[in-house]
Length: 218
Image (cartoon, rainbow, N blue to C red; front, top):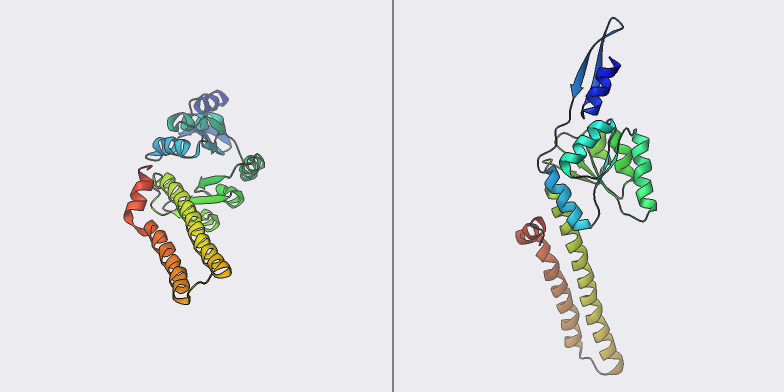
């Protein structure tokens, strides 16, 4: 029986021993199915972030290695308990990295809470994972993950741009008033005009084109 279990695990399967009347009677070989577009998502995330995704799993090394090979992940940490996943997340954070963790099970909840950003799979995720995560992929569509990251980065750049625009307008208006004579109507128009420009600039994120560009990696 031990040989059968070892062979099953070496083949990339999770072995479950069936015991009848305290006697081992058989072995069930279980295998996880890779989610659709998982390999493409790993490639997109690697290109977008410059860092290769890491697989943290409680599965045996054989099963974890098979999944990693199918998805293109090179760094694997297998046989982890929930506390072990948290330790790996914190180790990455100590190295100065910001960690986004995707999970769906009860065992993923502590790591989701420890990560800088936790993302749960909404359709098949456990209740605890959904409650712990910062964001939820409602349709379990992994391809949206790179798009969300790209869109959030664009939003950050846009906020920075808006701050520069608003600060420039205010600086010019204040300097004009201190060192010259700023007519009141012009001051009001300049201040309100900058507000309108900032608002219109921010509204660009609500256009469907912004999501399409983020999804297409542009």
